Length: 233
Image 1 (cartoon, rainbow, N blue to C red):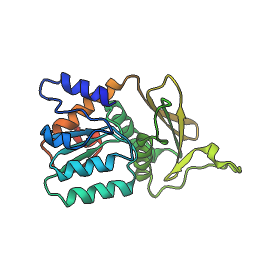
Image 2 (cartoon, rainbow, N blue to C red):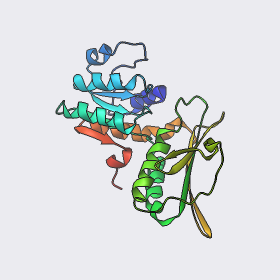
Image 3 (tube, rainbow, N blue to C red):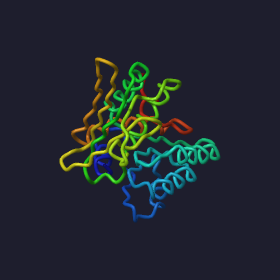
Image 4 (cartoon, helix red, strand yellow):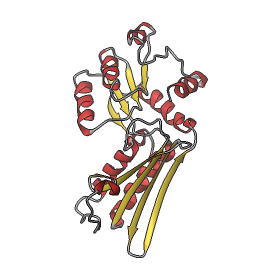
């Protein structure tokens, strides 16, 4: 993803790559190169330090790294609030199609009895469930607030076979060679089902969202979470 981002920025007529860093490179290169926006696709272990460096040095942050729990988001919000004028953008997924998939899932959620999520990625992905699946589950849970729990009479010792439950929404994670990034949200009620699926077949599918975030966060302040907040949806 990092290499794809560098190539996309280099090809954009209105953007310039100030510097490209690996995990072991010193962050000071960002200030020395006068970077205006930091784009982070690293690891959950490294990302918080990178965001802190960016905020403390007046560099807007665009973050696609996974691992942002509600507690972590609260930490970032506190950091941004303590540095007026700072800007941080975090997205569980930069694909425009993925953003629409999550929006459609939230729209459908109140009208079905059952819902489950299947997320499928390449075996090099370090986290499971994916950030996109977690965000989708939270959106669905918000939309279903006040409804009865989804019917499920399964009783067995090994509940892991039913996937990880996130706010009552089961998520099943598949890691398979040949995949890139895919997610299907399945809804069901008596006599009918609805499937909402998104497939990213190439990392290039994420680049329009990344470039949009770079352009937008160069002029915005505060914490923004999700590409949908940069689109007119």
